[in-house]
Image 1 (tube, rainbow, N blue to C red):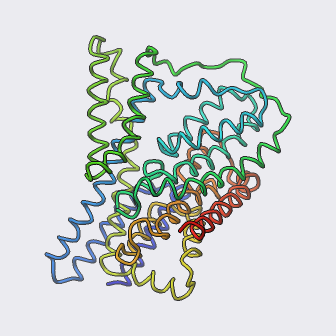
Image 2 (image 1 turned 45 degrees about the vertical axis):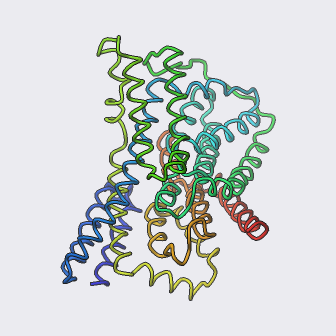
Length: 427
């Protein structure tokens, strides 16, 4: 039974990693894998009450992540529908490419910490189209935006889905992860950002002759500012809500979503339906990436079977025996996330190492949040942000390898070194 489960998981994992060449959505692979794994587990075990109980526990943990992501994605869609991100992006102006690079890098880094790396990448690359006329310039900026978005998402519990998983799972706490991973994450950005800005020094910003000021959806300044401030305020308040009430984060994000829905309906209550339809929460719910949510559900349920059958704990023991050093193991996991999706990698790591041996805010979990969050920048296909940039700016895989991958790798290793040094000095 265990051999069959390992083979099925490896095949499903390979199908997820090869989603683009196979042209099979990774959500389908994850769901089929989860269904087969639980079926084999049920048929190979006589105590069905235990399996039902384990499935219920796994579903509860998975649902918490899915509901949290659904709420966060909907809030971001509502803010975007009101052109709320223009509050930030319209203030980004510079005459030199090097100055603009520094500005874009830092804005992306901190915006990703509040939103998520995928949304931030889409917003910032769309902005670059309005500021930069030359495609070659936009390619370099897209590369740095990917690195900055992944680095920015790693150090907050709401910035990257892998850090969110660790936070909801109880492996890290919000304040501690921000204190511990911020410095390594900023170093991970500063190294490639500094090199790229140096290469572009002295070059002027060439702006497009014709700039589209909006996407045709008109909102007043009041509506734009209210929804932007309220939406970001809700996202930032969720960790505070969890700390104060000790309730799960998904309840906080759904509570905030209800408040945003109420305020939106009050603001637009006097408008005709045809003018307010695209601004409503109901419309935002129809625009969120349900495919990604389904993928998270499928892969987390699949990994749960490996956890319940102790396959992952046995794998952890073998890694400890063969490699021996926890920091090296985590660094390797981060680099592997440049090739395969970091969500199942982190889910597997959460099953490999238990909270009794490695308690909340242990070195393992904090370092894993950094490595899994930033390692995907090494290749363009290694993160959702990279795949989005690849599609938006038609970035070739080997161009990224030649121009950006080396910088991302140096930044990744520099940040990892900073975290290890920081941990040894401060504990």
